[in-house]
Amino acid sequence: MNILILDDELHARLSVKSYLDRFMDSEYTVREASDINEAITITKEFHPDLAFLDINLEGGTSFDFLSHFEEINFKIIFVTGHNEYAVKAFRFNALDYILKPIEPREFEEALEKAIEASPISSGQLDKLTEDIHSDSIEKIVLKDINSVYFVAINDIIYCQSENNYTSFFFLDGSEITISKTLKGYENILRPLGFFRTHRSFLINLKLVKSFDKKEGGSIKMIDESMIPLARNKRDTFTKLMKIS
Image 1 (cartoon, rainbow, N blue to C red):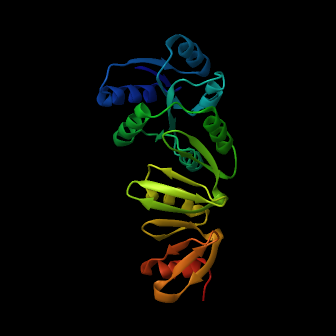
Image 2: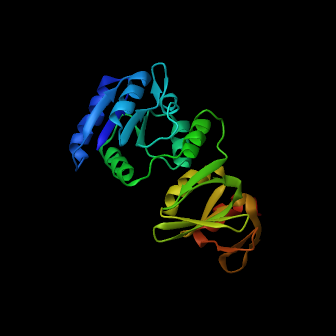
Image 3: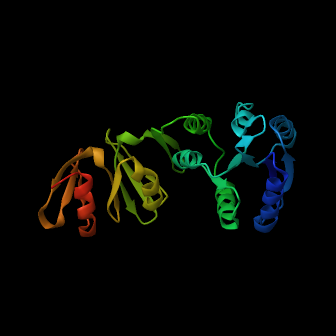
C-alpha cells in the first residue's frame, strides 16, 4: 500500500508515521508532503492508495489539493484541529477524520475503516467543501454497500434500528438501510430537532402528526406510522412538543 501524508507540520507527519508503524498489518510505503504543490507532484508519480490530509495548510487547504484531480482514486483520512463545525461537517458527510492531537484509538479505528472503504466520491467532496464553508447543513450523506445517498434532513420522518442497522424513512415513501447503529445518528440529528422516543426509534419532531396519551403514549407521524414512546421519555417529549 502506498500512503501519502500531507501536513505542513513536521511533528504531525511524524505522529502519523509512528502510528502507521504501530497499527499497519501489511507492507506499505510512505511519502510526505508539506504543501499542496509537493503533494500534487507526489500523487501523480506515487499513486497513493491512502492519503492522510491535514485540512488547514499554509497557503490553502487539502480541498485545494484535491481539486486538482478529476477523479480521486485513493482513500482519504482527514486530519483536523478541534473545530466543532468542521467535525459536524465530516459526520454529516459520513467521512472519516482524526482530531489533533491524534489519539491512538481514533487513529486505529479510522485506519481500519479506510482500508475497507471506497474512495471518496466527487459528490461527497463537493458537499463536504460546501458544508465546511457554510453556516448551516441541510443534507446528510448515507452510504450502503452499493450507493452514496445525499438526503435532505427535513425529508427524514424517522429512523428505526435493528441490531447494528438503521433504516431511514422519508416523506416520499422511500427507505434506506445503513449498517450503522442508531446512536451515532442520534448524536448528529438530535440538535436538529430529532428525538429518541424509544431504544429503536428516532423521530423528526417537525413531522409529528398526533400523540395518543393512552397506555403510556404513542406517536403518529405524518406518514401515519405509529411510533412507540417509552415511559421514561414521555415527560421530555411532552415538554419538547409543549403539551400541557
